[in-house]
Length: 399
Ligand SMILES: [Zn+2]
Image (tube, rainbow, N blue to C red; front, side, top):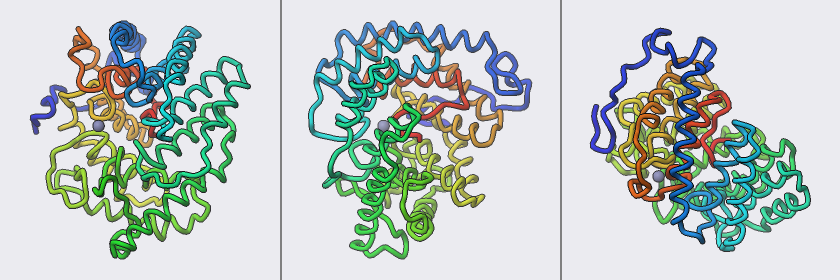
């Protein structure tokens, strides 16, 4: 099916080992030639990005559209390539970010805590423990009070910052108990709204953002449930079965006949195939539900999401992750990590082909947030992740 928002997929689907000749071997290792093409594209795009940064908003500290997003990209490149020059670039950009914190929000992508978390990791890698600790101390807030619950501006976005620090430093710097407290608050908030709406029978949890019950990963139910289902994030695992599972099942019942999902509860338009709204983001909840509850239907629904993205997810707009083809391709990587089915690595590589062949001639051609995680930096981040597909994670979201 071709979509006005997406390119008609020009690639034949995976049809056995001959499909991947010259791309990767039977163990999923990229050939030197293909990895080389990716790396040279990364270098080319970094040069375009750096040039574009000269005219970027100097006061945007955030991970979503500002300096912290660029720092996160360089931190990732340092992880993948081990080149200290990338760590230095991460330091330069996160230092800029720390100079323009707004004091207004606490999430990883849109608040101050993301830049602080990235800075903590940069300082840690630079072996400057005192500065790392200062940043970490500033990420712990007394209360998540009136925050919404969603990822971009809410509690689970805050949660990601804490998890990011623990994972990157490979130690429990932020105590598990504190993470559980935030999760308990998210759970209580969702149960409260469900009770007020008198829908506990259908969905024991419910969340709103600006009076809309969003479904997608960025603002909605599935992004929140993905976090609540992480092992050890809740003090009382019994509530997973009692509250979270039936709420996940409520979302599953919203599925369109195509296998895609609506952007909001009650919205009948099957239009958006973005990480932020639609199958490419909802798949993470489904895969996590499959891992936790072992119900085959969740995996089948996740596989359907993969089909939706393969048919309708090569988006025309955006070079980035939130609503671009690179972000959508992460769902193939998540299916590959779980199933090891070479079809999904093949599909990811085909999306990267589009990125490799595309001429990124001038920064003015970028869509909306041009340079950061939502823009060209997102494409570069994705290409670097393809070099280590089993370790790939959708940045600022996937645990
Ligand atoms: Zn988006």
